[in-house]
Image (cartoon, rainbow, N blue to C red; front, side, top):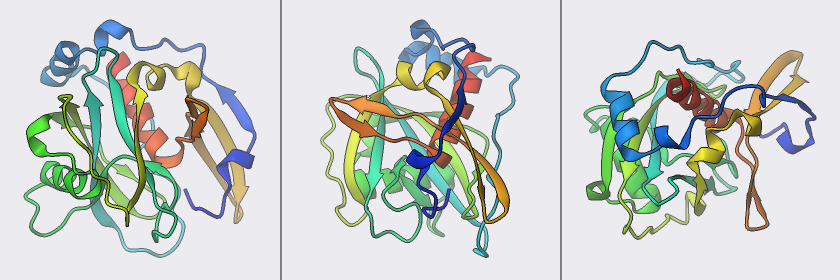
Amino acid sequence: MAVSIDPRAVPVAGTDAHLLAVPATQLTAEALRARFAQPPVWEPEIWRERKFGERAPADAAVLLPVVLRQRPTLLLTQRTAHLSTHSGQVAFPGGRVDEEDTDAVAAALREAHEEVGLLPEFVEVLGTLPTYTTGTAFVVTPVVALVRPGFVLQPNPHEVADAFEVPLDFLMNPAHHRRHVAEWEGVRREWFSMPYDDAGRERYIWGATAGMLRNFYRLLIA
């Protein structure tokens, strides 16, 4: 979503508390491996956002790093405020697919290393989700992976203002998925937000990041 919209100022149109949460038993390493080894028949809920601007499409990849703590978490970043796109937003580690990247998985691993210092030897890639096209014309491949604890992060201060973890069961509970609708530049736009209280600090997850998490939820609940 464009930074011209203050997402916190847009009223909540509704939540999805009526939908089932993904059981904790399906958020373990074994269950996640099994889900990607034999995925069910499912469809992503969101394929693309309404385009704004004239940016040419560009391939990108992000890592959805599930950290294998006693209560599994998802590693996320807060982007720095000066970046040209999605500045200041909560995001997955990731970025453009470069020419030297063999595929989206390689790009996601490289970007995670460059952005937060996550070494590939701590990462076990499970698979990918369908592409998600942002309003800024990035065609993003989400790469889901398990991350073994013991890593030491070194965020790149040019790109990452902060790195933090959110419990996976919180994100996979649709009671925490808030819907928003707004008219902007004559176009109706809809998106999800998933604000998380991190010891008194709000982590405002919304837009493309929330959309890809919603698709991850759809895969796990299918």
